[in-house]
Picture 1 (cartoon, rainbow, N blue to C red):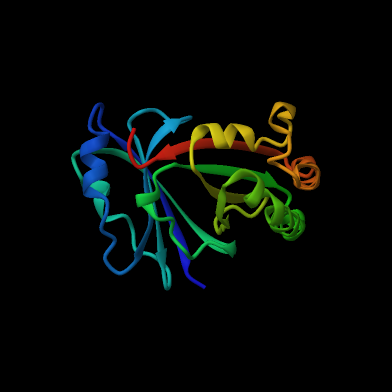
Picture 2: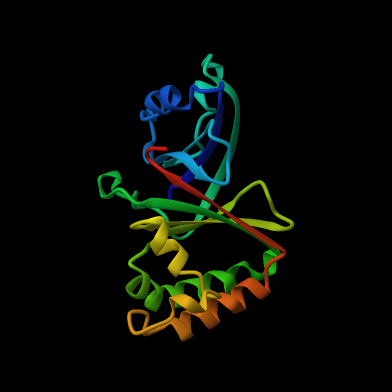
Length: 198
């Protein structure tokens, strides 16, 4: 299974667009996604994810004058995770981190994939994968990336948002209960929203 190199670049002020344009190539690897921050991180954040057949090299752009700092993680695929989203579709990609006891990771993955069965059809979303940070053992750090057609679709997919329930989300009760079970096993979670443009 390939590894995911997940890099969060902090650009010099007002240089995120310039930096974004430079980060599309990953020689020796395969680009999974390149995003500008929309909700959560500061406006100078650019995030890049790439797939590697073995241990990925250090970030070559760390010395670029437009880069203030790079935070790099290497993650193992837990499920899905090896098919990049098509940037031509537009939409948004959410990056959600789950912090949980390592003994619960397998159950969390099982609950999540079971929920996806109805969640995708009800919300028009596409979960891209789950990955686990190799350097964070106790507690475990797991990343979920999901594509949505729009921010409105993401808002309507929140399992606790009763206003979104209706005939268009026929399986909501099932996947909502599964996501509630998943949340109960977490120590912490947070989400950021990204797009190819910002």
